[in-house]
Image (cartoon, rainbow, N blue to C red):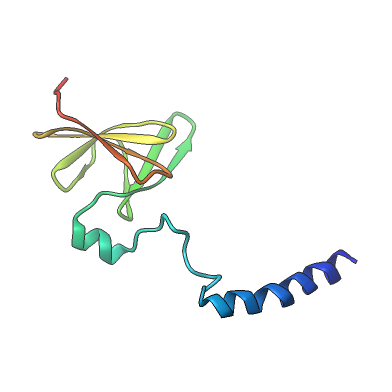
Length: 108
């Protein structure tokens, strides 16, 4: 019964996507393409992996651990949902699932 219900919903919803010109397989609204990252020079925190006491961050498709460099920045801290990068210009914090980037100009 559930399979039949799911099939009917799929059949009736598919035309509505087509009518609106919406691709149901397109990436979510917050997705940033690799071409746009290269063009605009933005750093995008894509994921954080934790294994035991160590953490690895993926920024712009690169696997990084604390102390690694990306561009002009050095990865200082990897938290559960954010990373902190340092450069001569100051501190940069990137967060997961957020379009906002916090820039701290004060040096510690």
